[in-house]
Image (cartoon, rainbow, N blue to C red; front, side):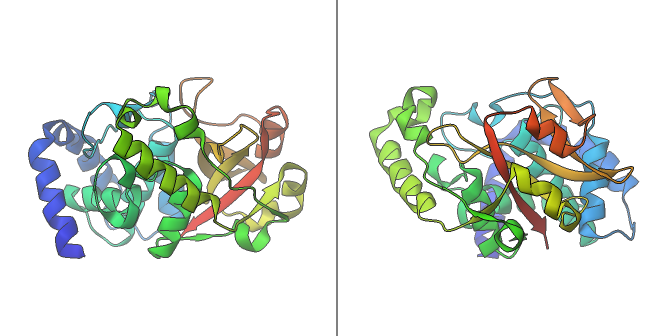
Length: 272
């Protein structure tokens, strides 16, 4: 498996020259975090804060007709922000400071079983991202332990709105995505309802992944970021769609979520 990933990595690097331009940002980060003695969660929060102010840019992974690895550390959406920070933290916590490690970790966490095998191999639904990375031993799904309610994981948003995804005009890819949605819908998961967060927030750590469950039909998660504790209050470090940049919420997570009627609760993941 590892050999296959490395072959795909070399193939991707060769054909995606734009990735090389991102290595400058990686080099600066690797120098700043070189040989620091931090836990993975401490790396997550420190690296995440490094990107504060970075512009929010939607759909950066949809730029190619054929699926290729995309890296853009100059602008990111909520999911790519989580992926980049996680991949960096995994490398630095293992004392790996080579750009190739970052690329390899990113492929591992972004794609089903860590293999780029076309558009459907990308983990499009975030509950699928959580489940797949849990199976790979990268994260634990904390909300399955501390959640107070069963999560309705039925998804079909992508195929029901296939006109929003140019790749799904291909009938073969559409069919594969329908199969993926059926598999994701079969997951059994728990989540933390909005009114219950106050009861369990002390069990959420700095650097935990916070995914916002949504009432949007056919969709599981509407937004994602990291938990950050400030002055004894739990806040949310994320790529904001409102302010169009990476930031920490001014108000605590509980207050931030109360203003969002479409959010029904949260799922929590923790990097191992």
